[in-house]
Amino acid sequence: MIIGGDWKDSSNGAVSSILDPSNNEVVAEVPRATKQDAKAAVESARTALESVGWVDIDPSKRGRLLTKLTGLVRENSDQLARLETLSEGKTLRESKGDVAWAARAFEYWAGLADKVEGETIPVPPKRLNYTLREPLGVTLHIVPWNYPIALAARSLAPAIAAGNTVVMKPSEITPLTAIMLGDLALKAGIPKGVVNIVTGSGAEVGSALVSDPQVDGIVFTGSAETGKQVMESAAKNVTRVLLELGGKNPHIVFPDADLAKAAKSVKEGIFTNAGQMCWAGSRAFIHENVYDSFVKDLVAKTRAIKVGPGTDETSEMGPLASKSRQDAVLGFVKDGLEEGASLLCGGKRPTDPRYLKVAHELAARLQVGGLAVNEYLVTFPQTPFGGYKDSGIGHENGIRSLEFYTRTKNVSINLS
Ligand code: NAD
Image 1 (cartoon, rainbow, N blue to C red):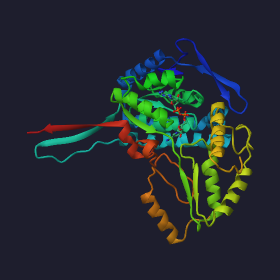
Image 2 (image 1 turned 180 degrees about the horizontal axis):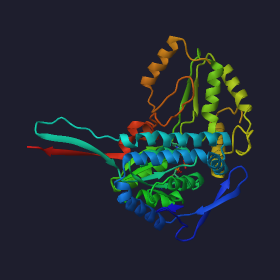
Image 3 (image 1 turned 90 degrees about the horizontal axis):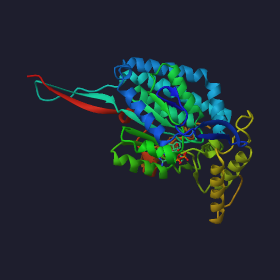
Image 4 (image 1 turned 30 degrees about the horizontal axis):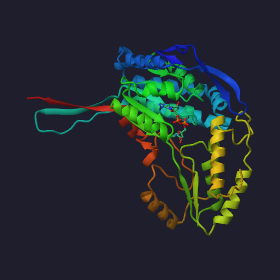
């Protein structure tokens, strides 16, 4: 792990084995951080936040550092993708896509670093009133195992662009690409202590980090259950939280859709990354007039997916990320069968204006944080991403997510 710009072992020497889920072989050993290491990481981020090299940095230079990091991520994309596949299991093609997404996030936020602007506010005469958009402070980033590098980059990039310092705790199952990102951040010239990567369990090190009063903001991506615990701990210190939690997202297929294209979207929506996505399309509402033929096509397309190790270039779907995920998914199948479900197997752009009208009407009425028409949801660093209801609080991605990473100070000057 990386604390204060230095490679560190755990303070008690403990390590965790990282397993390749396709064969359960050990691919790496990483330090299993203690509460003491968690505290040291937050202290290091706090020191860096107030250090001359960071507090006074020209915002354009922060942007250039992120541009350099973008380049390094692209130069090292093969290695990053391999590390991702070895620990998460997803196919190399999927890992390469995630690394490319991470590079785009750094690139997007690099361009925004010198555009974090305050405002002047019209007030009665002989006064000057304005706001400053300041860095929030030390931000803590807790990342899950399903999109390790993309989700690490998604919050690391705006945090750095806005001038914060970071402590990141990747999932204990998939910490390898986050560690490498921390190393690349140093190589890009980001000052020591600005990016700290702490590896360890959620129960021990994650909970210590979220309850540390020296943390100013917590970006948590993970399950709704853990998110609620994180929010409870944060409340004790009145720490700001951004929660990106789970989802149970439906497809809706209308009878006048391009049904072959819709079946492909439904297949990709649920089986990309072996179904391990918060935005997986895990439900489908199919119009009764096309239900039977649609299901038949979907089952045929599903049967044709080639499952194999992520490192095998011919695999279309890798293994689930860990034995505990496999057990959980088998449990879902069992529950479904017990509840009476049937087990069937392990276009054109809309030109019809009536069709688009339905889509627009539904978009306004559905209680969801995001939806996609004619494809499954695609995310970009510049478009907001966040859920309604139990799926979270706040948004990642997009210029408005800067609200989270900055705080606003009002300055009122009486000029008379
Ligand atoms: P999880 O909640 O078990 O763990 C997420 C992270 O939290 C891990 O790093 C873990 O170590 C840490 N953690 C666990 N207990 C903690 C505690 N008490 N205090 C602090 N940190 C703790 O989730 P997971 O199983 O790793 O991830 C899968 C979940 O993430 C799914 O529910 C998925 O839907 C969700 N997810 C959401 C998004 C999104 O953008 N909304 C994206 C990807 C995944």
